Figure 1 (tube, helix red, strand yellow):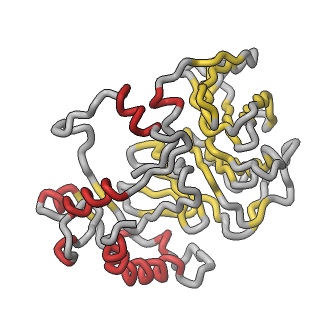
Figure 2: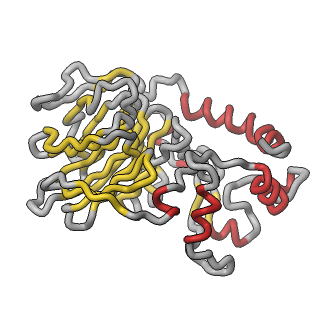
Figure 3: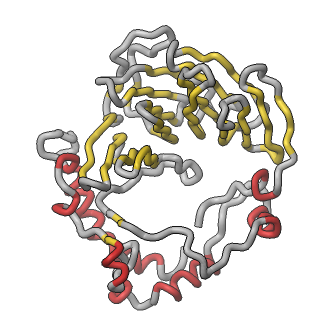
Length: 320
């Protein structure tokens, strides 16, 4: 940790505690009077594009109150911060094959930053916990709940409360009817009207956003090392909706959401960290705790090894 990190922490400690008290309330998350029903501008100061043009920091950090400038702090952090890497020097090696970015180019344009919608990340490597399905719909994990937030209205509401007992409201073969208690979510996926949350113990919670209640709860694995690393929702050429769950137990499982059943279970000798599907849904790329990536035919199950660039197959590092 940089010597200046503590100073930043002190600036925000009281503010964060006050905000957490405001957000948590009586910790029962009553919809009548909790923060989910209140406009954000009533809770905390946010940062808009016009504020940044007037000189305000994008993250809302009051640099004028600190003894260090933003540029100096950034330089110090880059010098002192050590990335976690599974393969030594993989970050440096990847830079040799990646196209250098033009420092003067404009890739993104800042629009808005709100500090009252705070994503919850429980594992430093698993950060697939914020999804934007449209320009005005964002889903995230926060305070043991899955929330929907609208940048248009600056309001949020609870989609799934994970603090207590989550049970399915529909009957399907394989449904864990007793549900789950206090599920710790490691990854999230949302597409169209389907939301899937994956847990640290292989839990899967499926909810259709146009239906009341939870449609499906199951355990993808009972392995002690069954953390859900990633989820990928896709549509088959037939039009049926599926999702892929990648787990630390070496399994990649294909779930059919029309029948609520596993239709494929791919097994590997190493943890499956992420999967990406081709646009036609016929091929899937799987990467994990192995220096080689795999290409799998979703229909036949045929596996082909890929020659990946260093950036793809080795760079398993923490974000700066």
